[in-house]
Image 1 (tube, rainbow, N blue to C red):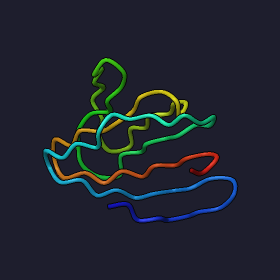
Image 2: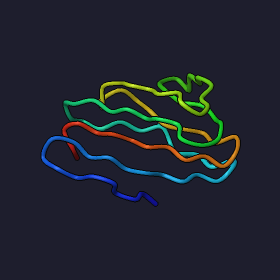
Image 3: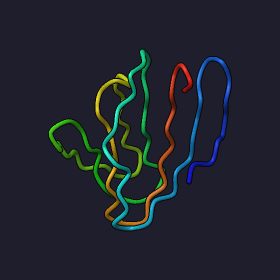
Length: 88
């Protein structure tokens, strides 16, 4: 469940709380724009195309085009903040 922190015509910011072992599935959007995923608490991995996995911990950020496949796998309880510009 996402908690909307900000929503405007320029960008949207969402907070996601993931339990240990939770998967924020790999997905993409057929839109122009960019997104960022910032780890606020916990550890896990950023997921990408072909199930590429990049370790992610507190302070780590993934930035990509919104068309690129992206997801998150939580190793511990995790809190991530996702920014989408322009908002969807």
